[in-house]
Image (cartoon, rainbow, N blue to C red; front, side, top):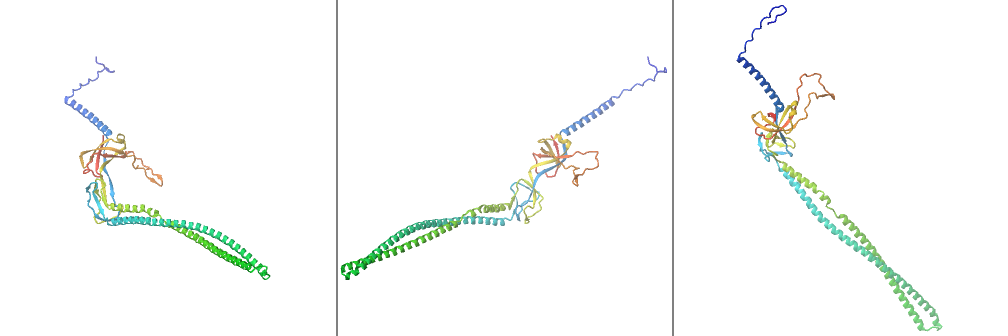
Length: 412
């Protein structure tokens, strides 16, 4: 039974819902499915992008060096060209080697001259040593002569002493004989003595006088010999002093080769330096590389330390990819990376994360007057910082890679 309202009237009847058409229902279901699929796909893309960070803010890099001569001179050979590919050991340029060849010859000549000086000095030292040895022998002989002269002086002194004693004895005998003669001569007149006794007394006086004269002569000879022996001793002493002085001079005159030998390292260093300078006139490629930034020609004057061109090392290529800081959590060392270069997007290269940057210059890092300069404005939208990630390419193609080329990287 239909219900009535408070007024007692029946409510109006609800019109019947018309049945939906099958095509409209299918379209709605398809739309909902597509929306759901799009959301799922978007979620998968976001998750995939978050798990495998990707960036096109990347550039190709390689190590490079500036080639500068280490010696100065005129370029006599420059066989390379700009942007040319060269291999390790290929000649790069040649500086006029003649001045350095002359310097090497001079250094070798000085070294040989020093060796000859050492040989001559050693010969001279050998002669000086022989002279010192002879002086030493002469000194020994002189010292022996002093001893001999001293012994001769002693013998002569003893001989003088004996001669003096003989003179004194002869003098006593002479005085005795003279006194006897003088005593008996007055007795001859009184005939107390005979003439024969007087003659005997005279003879005794003459004999005593002869003995005395002989003793005096012997004393004079002994004294002369003593004086001569003393002179010989003094002469021997002088000769000994002279020999000793000559020995000292000979020993002092013995030179040493230490001063000359000490010059050997210096001469050898000069030879090595001259040889090294000569080797540096010829410069070869230290590795496989491309020549770039070459603005010099043969005949130019090269100066040490002044760069002439650049060599790009083709042995190792890498990519510097700048990733947002929010993506760094899914980037780890040694992660594999797909690398694409813009010039050849159809080629994929295999890379590996070698390092992750830990610092970039902050935008609010300015300093004014020694104090931090903080911007008073406030940015409502904060942009995430980008940090460089260094990716080493394992299979680079040197013909396709160029420093500064744009790259795309995807971390796997």
